[in-house]
Image (spheres, one colour):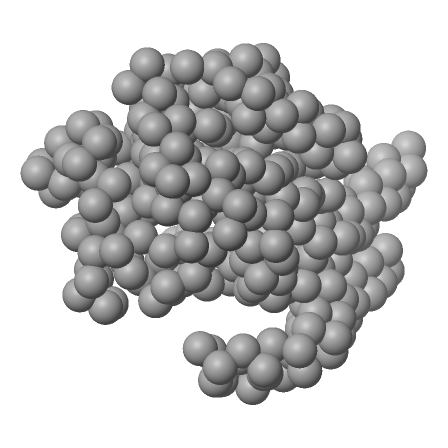
Length: 309
């Protein structure tokens, strides 16, 4: 009887080890989405989408287009209209068709990843206040499966207000958007701001350009540095070593053409090698631990007998 129980314990232990290694090789399903700020015509969406995909390991990125009133690059009247519409979102909390579109977009992404999946949602500028309004129409159980990453947001999004799985708000210290976000200004004056838990949810970045207008851009150096860090975090948590290797093989050559990040191709090649090492390490760990425990050759600790005088 004891031998049978011991056998079942060994099998359960081996299965748990296999499950742990399997989880590392095949992490949970995710979906990456993003919503833009003002002055983005349809043709402006492809470049940021490609850059975000590249930084996050080559995963597919779906965008929810926040339409612009502009009809051309020189349409300043359309730009002013965009600014007026954004102010109605910020000042009056006005629900518009853009908000409804984002709610539908996020719910569709949740369906794609399933009950145990995770949606990673990136928002920039006006896109952040649209996300804040959309959150008011999402159910708590839906929010719990979404992570929010906001850059230069016209509204701060925190877990103290919505039960998102994670919220992070990045602001350049000289971003002009701070003039309309009192909560971020308050956090800047106090030096830090925490959300519902212990994780800091509002982070201020030193300017990389010295120009406020430039710093507000999502793909300009200040926010781009934080975006790259978020991409590395995503890959370490949600991409299997196989996925990281594939990203290096197929995305690396394309990313070498991006002049603003000259060492990207080298970095992706380095990660491909690391990913291969991790794969072999995990497989060896799985095989070694399973065989050792099934054969009963694990570490044993014999009791020490003390001699009494």
